[in-house]
Length: 176
Image 1 (cartoon, helix red, strand yellow):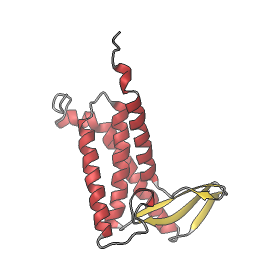
Image 2 (cartoon, helix red, strand yellow):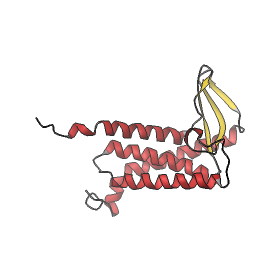
Image 3 (cartoon, rainbow, N blue to C red):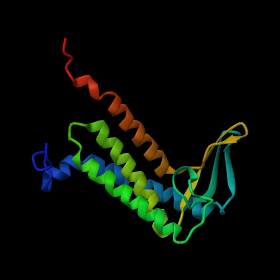
Image 4 (cartoon, rainbow, N blue to C red):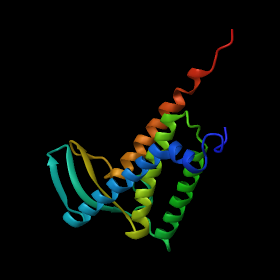
């Protein structure tokens, strides 16, 4: 179905995308607020233990992509290149999200989580020059990559999309 038939303009679009738009906005606000608190309260490269041996708050910066990919690599205009790639991915996801049927609630929520997270991290790349990461999960001597609210939203969004994809065949009638 096209966007027009499903309320792709005017008040119909607002109804169709209201939950998703609110979710995206809430993620961006929560992400930026928590990052601002970390920048203001925890010096760069410091750590605050919350649950010993399990959970810390840290202040680190990721100048690369997801999971620190390219973080240790330097090249001319790196921040600009990473921001442009992130912007292109964001546009692609937004275009895909706009084509989702209004009946695909889980997929639409998953895409909204991904978009909110991607926008939150893009705001950092554009205005801070790197992404602020602060959640440090520890298992014994092993530390997971530090992450943030935006990364958590992206991960939950991908999980929702996978669950939606796995369940896609449940509505297809079988032939005998």
